[in-house]
Image (cartoon, rainbow, N blue to C red; front, top):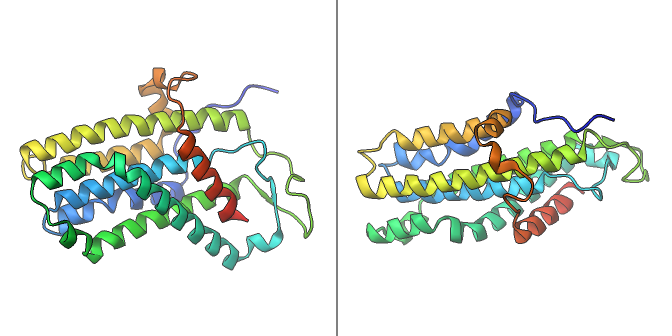
Length: 254
């Protein structure tokens, strides 16, 4: 058997559409709700947290099932699994938001933001909910793409493994390293917005959203841009994130 393949080129239209939705939603308060910079930064940090969870949650393991009960293929089951994944991802992302969103909290406090007013806006929560749903759909689609619908009572390991598990883990490390890179650029974005103001760097949030979509749409090109980040052991995955995302994956798809 040959070695595991490299990441594929352009991702599917569905995956790109979900990435577009998730990465564009934080722009809504910035461009259409009075240029609220703090809302944008918080939602972007939440987006990055969801990205970390997606990387771990969609990485396969030897213990993962390859065959599912036919009832799991019913529309109501798939919708339920998606909603459960969305809610669980949202809860874990909220925890990760505390460290990831610290630049936004610092910027907002220095600017005298009314946190109660900000968090009481329906647009803020609708954007966050849409991002959670997009992440849940993405995770469910990923699970369905690597499992086979079996018969009632069939062993969850009856079907052969789809693709290469080794390739999944290697690509997972690549995607995780990409998220770490994006978090670094997010901190730089927070600094620019807080130093020069939203009007001076008005186009930067849109460019950052385009960068996020590019990372999701062409993972193969991302590895070529930052090849050293994907060497073995360069960017270890957080054990807490791993355990939470794996629990979400197992609970949501059953």
